[in-house]
Length: 174
Image (cartoon, rainbow, N blue to C red; front, side):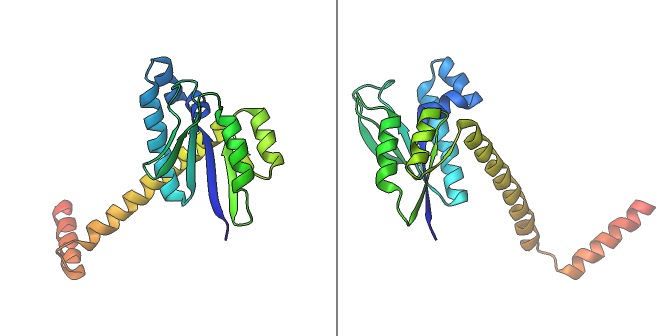
């Protein structure tokens, strides 16, 4: 089975996701970056996908580095390197028989280029919808787990619970 690897153009997502774009417009770019990483982390864990988020140096010049945060690989490109060029190069290196590479960007030229190199692509809007769909699945799964767990931890036996329910029904009818 192929491993899924998602490259995310970080600033493209920040510009394309409404709540992150709002933060960026209010000069809270660092908060928008962190929020993006947090949301993508939950998505990656639940969907079992490796994610690499690439930010170009246009907003943080001279910072070239790579690190892990929230189990995501975060990459800041060199000062004269765009996220697009970094992703294009990486897709060529990573798109192997054992890896299914996906690139999330709304840059149409970038989408076509990575598609020509054999990677799948999705827009910022598509990834936004997917992440929020997964958030809802997590919420539902958590709720169901809590319900099952609460029942499992009940100090009453099934027979005792049935007796209590019958007693409650008797009280309500009176």
